[in-house]
Structures are given as structure tokens and as C-alpha cells.
Image (cartoon, each protein chain N blue to C red):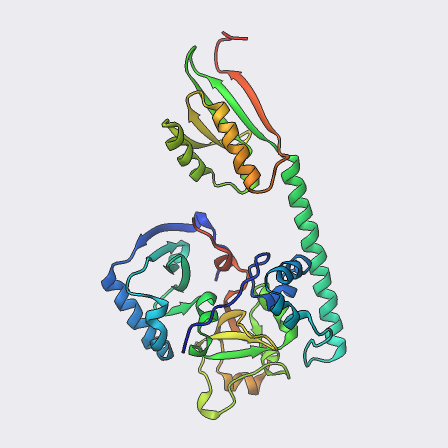
Length: 182
Length: 183
């Protein structure tokens, strides 16, 4: 007896037959049609082949499913808006006259793993890099050394990989103690 | 069981010794005898076999990047990914279409959902399942399982009493274990 391989929907991660219960069915349908047209016709080809339950319960179910769908859509939209509205802040903090650290905050909204990113930064720039909690901005990544430009570029590519190109990346220069430079 | 589980709840991750791996395999087979013919395909001799310990003493076993089964106490429970691969090996019950929505949001399964027209329970006398058996839960007109649960009463009782909780939810599509990504 061989092992079965089950197709999972890319959108909602369920097997396609359960897509209708995930609340994202519109996008699921599009995905399925593109990637597995045979499955699509099997599942959605014949309209109204819903099941053995009576018409009234079926109607009720449909209604609640639609409600769920709308809810999910709204949630997705809100999340997207939140993503679009937020920005990444790259802060250059001067420690002494010649030394500085770079603090990057505002990344957690974009589902970027801070710990992992700090690791990559540490090896990329060959410096110390850590995740620290600050009360004002939430978690931030602190990189030792003046690497703001490179870090900015790297984050921009990271964001564009996720399909978020219009995110603002803000640069701030800050002095920790005495004002030396302008 | 997996209402809440995220990366923060993972305490440790480690590769498992091959001797322990063998023991796990034989234990899995002894629990689900039908798995024997595919066990080498599921868990090849040379594979990345990881043990992930989580909050509340939950242990997940991951083979080649896929969580295949887990245990909380002594019993090994298959994950849905494993169930989808080889559903024949596990005792199955079926719920009607109206119940799917609630099951997918993590509810326990009520008896009427199992006994109604769309539901299915083992029919033959010899196939009756006892209380506390781990079962996979299928749905009306669906091919794949949507949840895994533990019987709160024997299937005989479910049929005769037909009221209240019948199956306790352990793991369902879309819960935290299903969505868990560790890397």
C-alpha cells in the first residue's frame, strides 16, 4: 500500500476540499484553478452537489460560511492596512565620536523573524548583533558599527521579497550624549 | 490541546539517536499495526528525525521537516499530515457536514453530529471502539480527515445515549500545530 500525497491549498493550507471552511475561498478557488484544474472541476465543477443534508440546514450553513468569509476578508484587509501604514525605522546612535550602533525597529509587523535577522546581520557585517526590547518601539535589532546603509538595503530586498515594495524605511540619526556632529 | 502553541513555546529541539528512533518506530507500529507496511517509507532509516519539546510537556516528532506525530503522555498520536498520507491505519469516525465548521474552530464533537445521516460510526459489533481510543475524524463527502480526537465514550454509548460530548478534540486542521513553523 503506497503512501498518499495530499494536495494542500497554498492559500489556506487545508486540503482543497476544506477551502470553503477557511473563509478565504475566493482566493483558494483562483489558486486551485491555476494549479490543479482537474481538482477544481472535481470540487467546484457541478454546482449544488453539496451533500445529503436537507435544504434548510444547507442554507443556514452557507450563510454562516459567508459570514465567516466576510470576517476573514475584513481581517486580511485590516492587516494589510496595518502593514502599509507602518514603517521601518533605522536609527543610527552615536556612542562616542567615532563609534556608533544601528538600531532597527518596526520589523515585527512584517512577519520577519528578528532573532534570525540579527544572526544574519551578525555574520554579514561581522559584528555583534542582538535583539533587545525597548519600551517605546517594541523589539529592535541592535547592530554594532556603522552599517545603516547596508542594513537598509538588505531590509528593502527582504521586504520586496515578501511583495511589500511601498514600505517606508526611515533613517534617523541620533546622538546619544554630547552633540558633536550636525 | 493545540489552542496555543507558537515558536515561543518550543523549549528544545534535538536530533534523536537512531536507537531511540528504532524504538519509536516499533512503538508506533505496535499502536497502529497497519502502519507496519509503510513505516520504512514514513520514517526512512536515514532521515532527519527531530524531537521538539514544547510547553506543557508536549513532545513533537519531526521527520524530514514534517511533524508526523506527537505525544503528551505515553501514547503516540499521529498528526494530520501523517493521517492524510495513510488514513487506513487508524480507526475513523465521520461527522456530518453541519459539524465541520465547528470542528475546524476547535470544538469537541457532539454525539448527534456522529449519529445523524451524514455521520458514520463503526457498524459491526466487533468494530466498536472503546472509550479513550484515539480516532481520526472524517467528514461527510470529504476524502481527507479534518481532525483527530479521543473518544469520550464508547461508540456503542454514543449511539445509545446520543447526547453531549462524544469526542474530545486533540488536533484539527488550522490549529496551532497545523500552522506551526519552526524555521
